[in-house]
Length: 225
Image 1 (cartoon, rainbow, N blue to C red):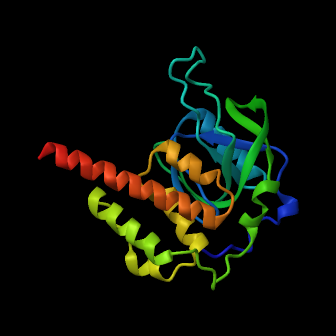
Image 2: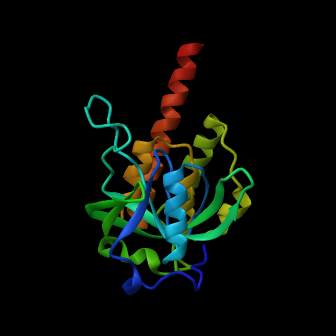
Image 3: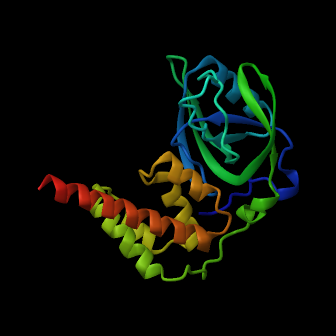
């Protein structure tokens, strides 16, 4: 996906970042994520972000089952992705509907004091500096055909519809990032993918996850019959 001229340069990425913890919602560089904001604290967060650099961090909360930590402040996974608000509208019933476009992943170095009820972190960007590079149009992951075959089997078994014609023309980084964000994988699988810095390794991991999920579903079907 095209990196727009509104994307910040690596040197301009912020040292503090508001974050929106949401299980199962993974943002990846160049990928768009629609959000429907209605909680007062997150409405304040969006207003503050729009008044500043338009950058917002998406991150998954960690599983807090069997812990005594309050549900409203779960631990955060160490890696998330910052997105730029590229579309924004207000509704008559007090919601904000927006679109985040992924910019660059980050690693949390520390959590900062909250502001207006929402959470903030100090992000480290260095491990994911390549996220801001334009994907090479000629880049190809190893065994792309096998990767696509694994994706086709997964989609057939899971009943997932994807725009195959659009995927065919995508460069590998954009293809893998789009699938990371939008396939119905588990939150744990999505987190493992977002934490894998390089596209080739992320593609290998994704192919393995798709094949395991396909086999597991087929085994369940066999048991039912």
